[in-house]
Image (cartoon, rainbow, N blue to C red):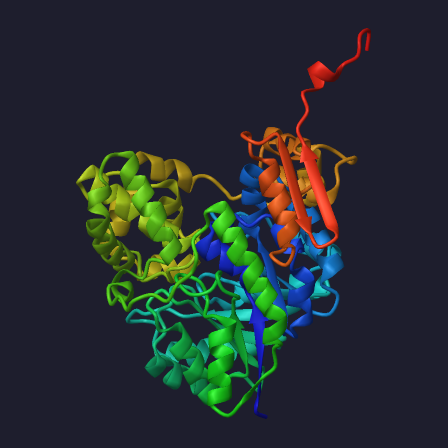
Length: 495
């Protein structure tokens, strides 16, 4: 078969990578129908991290976002990235199950499942929950580079993932670490050990090699490529759908995506980027240091921010070097959420304090106790470092703590009782009631016009000008006059 299909990541990974999850619901709704008509295999829409961001900073209801997009996307399955509900806390099974059920109830049809250690028990639990909710499960094989992430490792992981009979497998490269040579070696190996289950490629462009990796994956038989629509492609995001489609044709294959339908989407988001001051993704220069520290692109800016707060922004290079050492001492965890944040935060603390592991985060203590990866995490740690972490008083306190596993009834009693909706329960578990109330008070999502409505945009922008009292726009027979009036002066006597 010479046809190549695509999964769109613009509405999820695109703005998570480049716009810090700052895309509003109205921005999506303006072009959701065009994306739906382009013929994608799936459309990534949301991950658990978007829920907090949406409520806290955008003052928008994430459940309403899903429902409104689902009303406009009628042909293409909407996809959830199903990691943990709260990336930096251990999630009770009851909360995770309710989270997946409500995603399905509101319009999600696929779940791309992440398990930060590529461990079979974690995959199995999440696949079972997704299936029980009626979702197609896509299992991520997360790519990493270390002495233990060998060809044999990925062959074994492919066999384990395939044993669950998922809808698809996905070779996920969150750090943009793949090279064409590794794709050439790994893709046939995964396919040989995955019992014919379709394989997707999801890579990033941090090192500039993302598009080349897509080309090599297609040569090796991958038929499903994850891409984004510019300006939300490239940079630390995913490859551009237009670039990959062009290369697909040059290779003699047929890209099953309507690029004409997506040009208006590109125009819309280019307009939004310019209007809102959002960055525009651009091809990255090759950076070999990425292969050493393996810190995801979006996380580097967070590390720089942490250092800036203490007046040590000039220590960013030293912190990235320290990340390399901390990762090795923690047993080479895959640099993906939340493990990459554990490594990065600890590295920053080591640099700021000036003494390695003098101060340690609670998350790293839990990691050393085996609560983030179990036996694989603890057995592969540097024993001296683990002893140093666990010898402190705080570690002894946390060792006596047992992660709670409340039932849904217990969660509901704690968070508001029988009258609270399931969606509200999830929000209350993640956020404070004050944050949720502030979001509710902000009202429905703001409407954003598409770039194909320039006249309306012109009138909207002109109406914001404070130095104009009368605005007159004429196009052909259409004439619009806007006049600012002082309501106080116009009041009639006694009115």
